[in-house]
Image 1 (cartoon, rainbow, N blue to C red):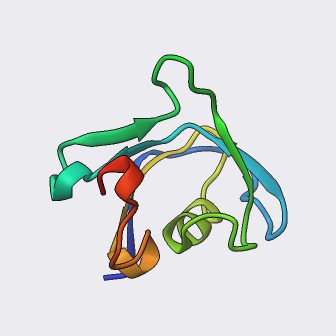
Image 2 (cartoon, one colour):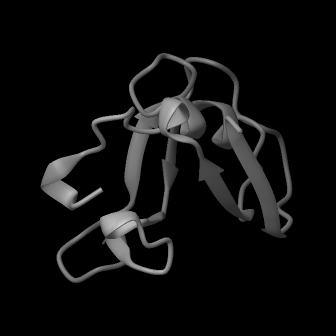
Length: 96
């Protein structure tokens, strides 16, 4: 599957370039293999927006490929297969 992107709300303006630092709000689902179960969110108490350098392998492949095509204010759902996320071993600390 790789990464599937569904735009929920379009954004405006230019898309980020490789190497640019982007800041996003995000929520991860898939705890225990159940896609309805949240495992983490930047909107949870004590969390803050997440910043990373795009296109540099600093995050999972699905984010590098999905976020680079986004615009400011865009809301999208990225669905990533294991090879575009945390691999076959998952990320046990988050229950995924």
